[in-house]
Image (cartoon, rainbow, N blue to C red; front, side, top):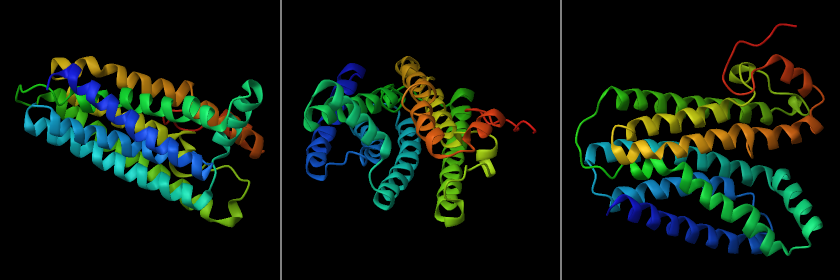
Length: 264
């Protein structure tokens, strides 16, 4: 299967998956679980590419294996968090705002503002996992080894950040407090940084092939999303309203790239 046919098939797969999830959300009246299935969905797209593409098998195995470790870990973490915490207030506020301004139904609002964007986002983000599996040209160079190292680092960094935050939240003494310990003392969003590092690493592996090189739109779009659109900006708007010490935290700690905190 050539590159265009592969990414077209995966787009149909992503849209079909999220159409089913949209239907489920009409029953639960809570679309918050979509974040978990965004990670699971990229994993599914990587597996689909592994089965449909005729690329060099070792490169396919490395890319698919890294995506599976990242996606299953993150998807499981987000799913368990949703089960424990319930409705995500960010989605609740978004849906309420759109419905009030436009008068749309719940079904239309969740379709156009949650599930359709998420399906397209995972398809674009997962381009390195798709196009990186197309070429049959064998061999791994320095770029690929650097990508493997960066992806492994990113997966571990994100996992540690998520674990530190979950442990912080479990302690009732921390209610209303700002998490500024561990990796969170060096970055306000170390989990997002780890995620971006993971996908830049996967792109580096893919970039040793011509189709994979073109997949750079994936990590660029993901980094933009995490830092400028629906990731950090949306989260920080919510946290500023519920954590009195967050303004001081913002002054001291790097927004994204880990950096020693400012004193005072």
